[in-house]
Length: 320
Ligand code: NAD
Ligand code: UGA
Image 1 (cartoon, protein in one colour):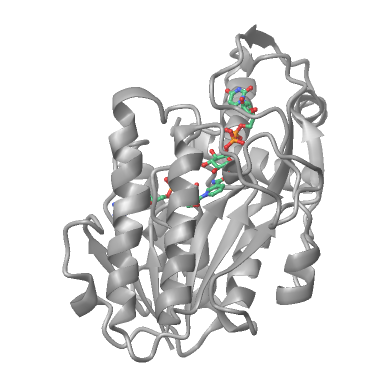
Image 2 (cartoon, protein in one colour):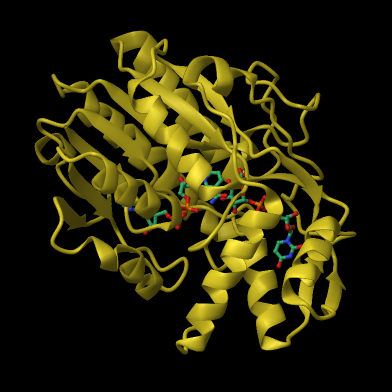
């Protein structure tokens, strides 16, 4: 089997890549990543460091700048994880980064995918941010998406592109809407990595707004397993599926769990809320269960502890 993982050096892409190589003795994985400088590219190199010498090849390039149809020849499954993430930074002049990485790159990849004769699945890493402040909870895939951030608009646009290529050309796409993903390797701009790092360094934890905002945090290995299932499940081209983690908790509740794990009082600094942040996410997992046979398996406390231990050992080795 030949797989492509775009964004293979990133948090989620590197975990999918490792999983494919660990469990498929016949997997050939082509990773494509531009090593964008949204966060330290050295962290991305470390994500890939254990893959050396395996059936893995890396193209270090921007999806917008290479001949994708040629590079992708013979591929069976595409995991499209590359993108410009981050809800809160997507305003102002940075928006161009989001349109280029999330919309243009996806359109180019879909055009290339149309030319592939052996492609059985195109999996797109969509986002709970497409919902904005949802109409109902738990939110279902047919509820009206109303993004609240420019980032969410670009993720929804790319999702619509996937559905268009499915309906017009029969491309076997599926969009998986990830709900705030965490675990070892989480990006440094995200809440849990920022909270844990601050706790371990004895610095104040910054909370945006009241801390009463709710997320359905999803552990990274659960996201990876859903991706693996999505490669072979029987799905109508253009399907959209929520992947939400089962832990619908507020930021303040997360801090209570973290304080228990850390074993010492946390110092918390409260700042203003940030434009683009929604108050609540929470997704129905009924479709994921019916269509993929998936349900989340890692509890918030176990997952947060694993992320805490990972960050602690990183800091002990001198990283930040
Ligand atoms: P990440 O930044 O760690 O990984 C994305 C990778 O894509 C990076 O390594 C980056 O260098 C690469 N990249 C960006 N633009 C590229 C381009 N034009 N060409 C080639 N490579 C490019 O982010 P992540 O947290 O692993 O997120 C992966 C995907 O999942 C993203 O598409 C993101 O929008 C989506 N997502 C993430 C979350 C989450 O909670 N982490 C939730 C919902 C959706
Ligand atoms: C995350 C990812 O960053 C997006 O790429 C992704 O698309 C999105 O999940 C999603 O689910 O679609 P977010 O929910 O903002 O976005 O994730 P975190 O950075 O973990 O933030 C969670 C909450 O903590 C937010 O309410 C945020 O305001 C808050 N937060 C974050 C703080 O209070 N302090 C911080 O230092 C960081």
